[in-house]
Length: 357
Image 1 (cartoon, rainbow, N blue to C red):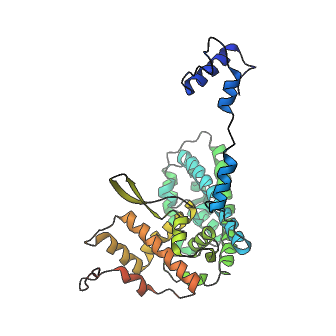
Image 2 (tube, rainbow, N blue to C red):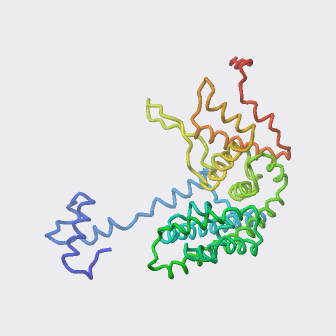
Image 3 (cartoon, one colour):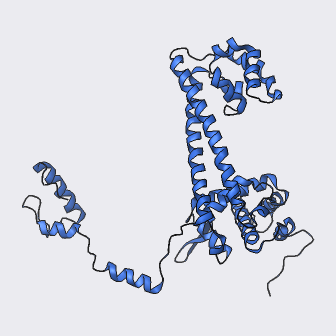
C-alpha cells in the first residue's frame, strides 16, 4: 500500500522502488511529474481470473495431493512423539545453560564430573554445585547424597577425584550466589524433564506395541523402542502405502538425478518429504551398523567393494532404505526378521556377478 499518510520524502522513496521494479514504466509516471494511482493499483492487485480455471483442471486431472492426517492410534502416537521432541529440545536448552554457568564458576567441571547430566552429577549439583561447597562436603558428604538418592555404590569411587578438582579450581567468586541459584534451577528442571520424558516414552512405546507385528522389528539389533516409535509416528498407517518406494519418497530418501540438457550430474536423495522420518531412519541406520553384525558387515561391503564402492554417508543412506524395506515387509506380511536374507546383496569372492541376459 502507498504510504499516503507519511511524509512526501517517504512517499517519494516508495515511488522510486516501484519504478525500479517495473523498469521506470511510463504508465506509472515519472516520480517528479506525479503518480498514476490506477497503474500502481493494477501493478499490486493480483489477477485471480485464471486461478479458478487452473484449480478446476488440477482437480479434474487428479494432479493434486491430499495432506495425511493420522487417525485414532496413529494420531496418538504422532502427538506423543512430537511432545517427546519438544521436551528433548527443552532439556538440551537447559543443559546448555547449565554448561555456561559451570564454565564460569567451576571451569574444571567436565574433568571432575565427566557426564554432567548423569544421575550422580545431577544429584550432587542439586545440593553443592560450586567448588567451595564440594570442599565443605568432602568425600563422605558426597557419598551420603548419592546414598540418599539410592544410586549404585560403584559410582562412589569418583568422590575423591571430584574433591581434588574442587580444591584446585580457578573459577571466579563474584556473582556466585546468583550463579548458584541458576545452576540449581537448571538442574531441577533437567531432572523434571527426565521424569516427564520417561513417562511420555513409556506411553509411546505402549501405543506402538498395539500396532500388529511392530514388536518383530525390535529383533533388529540397534533398533530400540525409541527409534521404532519415531519411525512409526512419522510414517503413520502402513496400509496407506502400496509399496515401500512411496515411503522412501515420503522420507526424502528417493533418488533424483541432477542433470540438465546433455550434462549428467550426480544422483542424490531428494530431501523432500518428512524430515523427521528421514532423521529417524538415519538414526536407525547408524545404530544398526554399530550394534548389528549383519548391518556392520553390509556397511563394510558397500564401502570396500571393487565395483562402485560407496562413501560412508552413502552407505548409511542405502542401509536406511534397506531398514525401511525390512520394516515394510514385517508390518505388511507379519514375517519375523531374518538376518540371512539381509546379506543377499553381498557378492562373495567365490561367487560370480550374474550377467544380464
